[in-house]
Image (tube, rainbow, N blue to C red; front, side):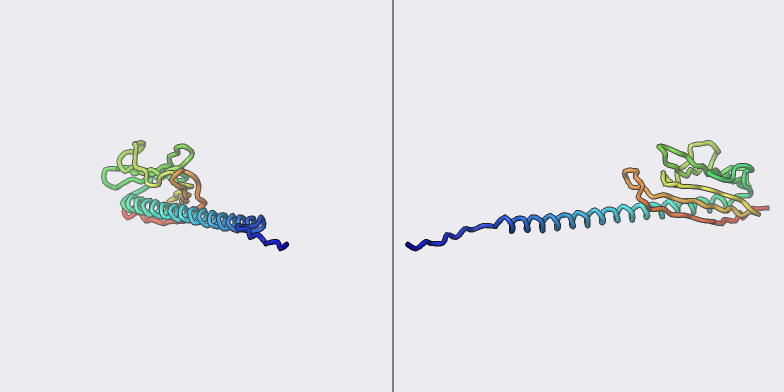
Length: 169
């Protein structure tokens, strides 16, 4: 009697396990790549926001200080700067406001203590000013946050920005 060999189609357990492991490694690699790409995109967006905020802050500081005749005594230093315009003694004020643990730089061009406009929104790390012989030195740091108000690990510093008051006596 001759026995016929039966042919079974399909995978063996070993082949199936190798396929599953290969697919899992591929899926894990793709997941890591997507996560890293997304984190890079968040960091670059946070950096663009910091560059925009720094440019607006520097421009606003430059305009206010260049037109000033003096600073208000006692209102220059950590978290504050007040300058006085030569015409009418108008005071322009820069101050730091804190909301929900985040610091913002506020500019009030009309009256001290008013509402003002936020020129660096929730991204301010530090703001320090000093005045020497009609030159205002500004040092500030900005910290990157994402749309969900989480730190992105990106920061930017503006160190020793020097602005000369044109109307200095």
